[in-house]
Length: 178
Image 1 (tube, rainbow, N blue to C red):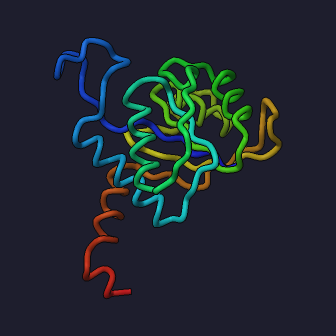
Image 2 (image 1 turned 60 degrees about the horizontal axis):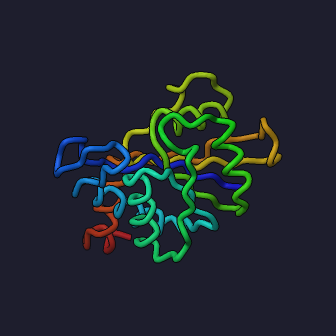
């Protein structure tokens, strides 16, 4: 299985635009652009998802939806409570393995998404791999659904690099230089 771990894009703060609960925070305009650019770069890479999982928090579901929309995929987003900020590694891993699929996207938050990535890669530190907002990591996972699968990091894209790749791909001079 290839597991894609994506941290949600930038969201408004509690108190802005009448938002009173953390769970209701939508993406900012910048966050929407981050998610759409991520979808564009994933499309250029030929990435597709069999299964899409997201935290029930608005910003994660919205990020997943914009990525899928940009990829023109009609996958249904499955809400997974363990992908919330303080979900446990065991609960997240059980949900991911139980979802089926060879290419799984899981959209979540810090610290849980970083803790999951670090644990799967053999670290006990939640800071082993840092996920800025709208960062994605592709992990190749073998020996599923073992509690301790064999996992390797295939690649990781931060939003600053995604922005550069997206703008490079849409530049006419870049296309003619190929």
